[in-house]
Length: 280
Image 1 (cartoon, rainbow, N blue to C red):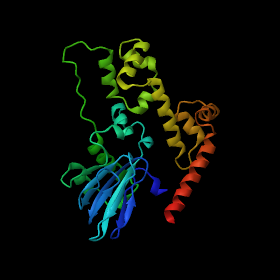
Image 2: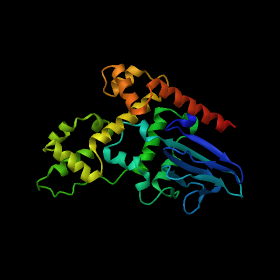
Image 3: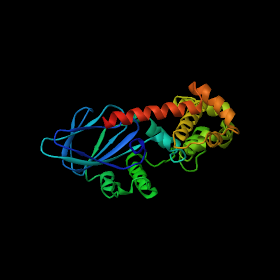
Image 4: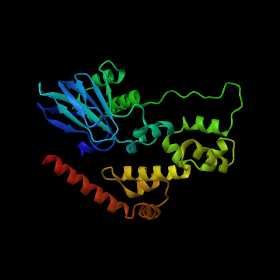
């Protein structure tokens, strides 16, 4: 289970010329402890050495190869954005959920003098993996790398604000979980406009439907909770806004074509197969 866990610090070792494949899903943060090597799969291949950090968002298949000069040691962890609800604001979530839209393009190679690499160097070793303290430290590292610029309103102080200004300000304050559960009518009320006007503003600025985004986040949240060990259907249903498990099961079947328990079984079978492949 640890291999698939989000915010779990690992240590890897490569002998001369050996390769390691970055996980295909989620964000990966990696720091070179010692040795030299190459990050391959991006364009172009890049050289890495002790102290350098590598950040990747799964936008392409990526490999780390040790050089022919000696062994390479590294630490890494994976961040699954779907496992963190109520942590990111809407604007932070959009940045993390769409790595292909970032500039410069991923992967990022950060020098050992960069704040993120220096923070990685101070992270305790994997002996404390899974502790709350270490997860908090790793989230600090994520923040140092992925936080968008601080929000500054484009409306001059003292000038009247329209509904679009109010919406933008709110979306820099609300977390994804808060927006997911907030009725559209209430959000329109806070923006001092009609619901129809609010939906139009959201579509113009983000190129999509606000209710559609809320539904998509609800699906991600449900799957994230169901993927946890010993997940209780009734508890997941309540967390997703359903009074009873039966109503939640009916909704889940409409979304995914199977019952929640079947989804859990298929996911467990898939992870088991991946683990066996890794062992081989």
